[in-house]
Length: 141
Image (cartoon, rainbow, N blue to C red; front, side, top):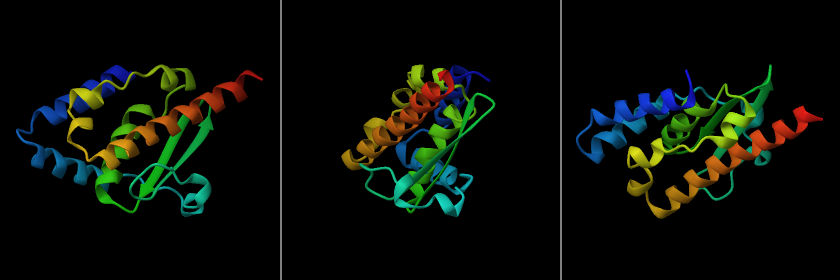
């Protein structure tokens, strides 16, 4: 499945909900299904700055692809990071770097988050793309 196909699947998922309370509930449910990060990565080194709640993000590089795992102390944030992982995990660094992630705007997520959660979303995306840049650079050496 391509990034675009993964995004379209999420857009379709969110189209089933009429109002934002239902969409928030869906995000909360996604948070409950987030595969948890190994506890050894729940340290300050993997903590994303700029988030209202604590968010830990780890990336593994295997066979030319990046696999993300994450956790948060806030269930809604777990759901948000799960939406990112569903689209970006298992991709090549170049794909992650170039991903427009337009589905975030298409489902209206950014517009319905508080400013601090919106900043956290931007920080999560930035960190995932930084991991991709680092692994791309390391792989080219």
